[in-house]
Length: 410
Image 1 (cartoon, one colour):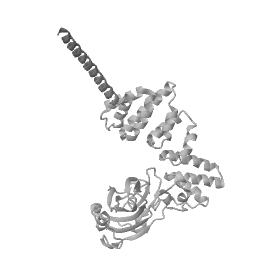
Image 2 (cartoon, helix red, strand yellow; image 1 turned 180 degrees about the vertical axis):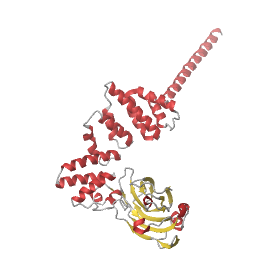
Image 3 (cartoon, one colour; image 1 turned 120 degrees about the vertical axis):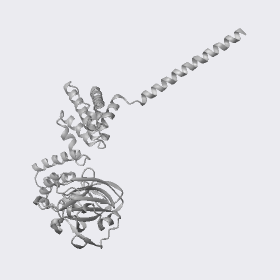
Image 4 (cartoon, helix red, strand yellow; image 1 turned 90 degrees about the vertical axis):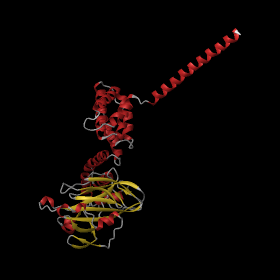
């Protein structure tokens, strides 16, 4: 009996020991899992700075995150750049600051930057354009050959800043070339140009060489419209009034043969075309400068598929924009300066015909500087490359035909 009791005691002690071991293993597994789930210090710090708010909110936490990143040295450079993608505007400033501090510290201690990794980041066009440019400028400060190595391949880069550099390089080459060689360089430059000043320079040179250049087509300006008005906007009250054309626009039932009661009597839709290089529809000159009035304009834009594009416009007047009956954006402001791409609105276009509708309002000011009554509107991608309507989307830079007005949607 005694022996039997001792055996049971040994079995019990063994069971307790096994249970204790299993418990320790389980706790270890839990701790290991939690440690695995917890982000490392660099990732955590980048995440904090990514979501930084304005006006100093969370500045102590941001400062600690900044210290953590700068203390991590070159290991933090790529994670910081990757953090640009989802960062707030204030977060971009914090991340840029961290990157520059680390780069400066590397130079001060005569340590090399991870050039190979940074080059790979720059060449990956899926990365943030701002982050790619920061990496490029940082490397270029120590490597004067970087510009000639990378920029030539960036003529059609998603980053307008890199494209500008690539275009400028071709322009410099064209100024020292002659005849057909210079013309070909200008053609190449135009295929990637998205900035107004560069396009003007290129167009002037090509036209002198006898080339036909359609700047309006290059930028993707909408040049053909149906327009109706004037409607009453005296005392600036008409901006908020949905006149009959506006009601039809919202309902997607615009009747091009309709007649309406306008400010000065009956009005009907009329066709208006602009031949301006930059797509300016000048109501004051092409129709009449009706003071204290509102006008409506509609245009059709065919898309081969559902796609996200930008509508960029400029006007010194108050305006509203609809795409397929949905209000895309509006701005009630009169007589501010106007310029190319003054406003940019991202829109979703459906396959087939899309209706772009525009309301533009003039007030009653009589000063010389308050007489402009005009707008310009173009369709482009996020880079600023003009996109033409048609059964196939044709983007400038894909072929010389588009840039030189020797073709269009094919």
